[in-house]
Length: 230
Image (cartoon, rainbow, N blue to C red):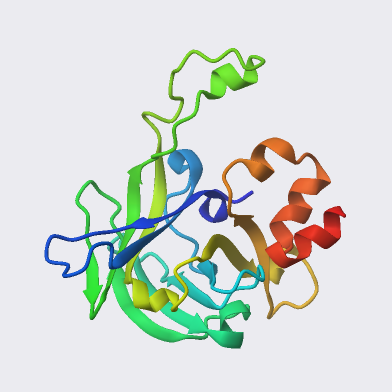
């Protein structure tokens, strides 16, 4: 797995600001990749997506897609984010309405946040927020309470949106996926994008699936899980 497109976690939570007139009127959508920061930049050929299901059919109705530029001679990288709805929400391309354009990526300690209208966006290196006693898990569930990820970093994309951008139903489902060109996997259809990684609930694929099942999980969509495992 290319660390640049290896999802570590996905988060969705209420994001309240002091000047918000209504409580919890905004939501933060976080997609983290690049475990242990093994890679030095985001993949410019990939599309990083956070998908939102508004009617509980396990199919996205709204998708936030992020694409990165190549790293310039100055060592900088930029990101553009689009919001796709309807059929475009599940299309494997960069279709959608631009909500963030040419946002700088923060490779250092200083956070560089881009704002456009009602949207805020950050992409870059940050401390891995996931807490897990990995060594205790590997030792047969003899947990000690130590956090293996305490000193580890990841690449994160954080998009803060008004709740209205998530539809009218407050009960939503959220997951993430990364698309890469098929040619990168030496598969037919060089112009197509394929789903290389997917995550919703944490640790499901990491812990409970093994061997070929891991690949199957990463390549199918949530709507296909029941058919695959029934």
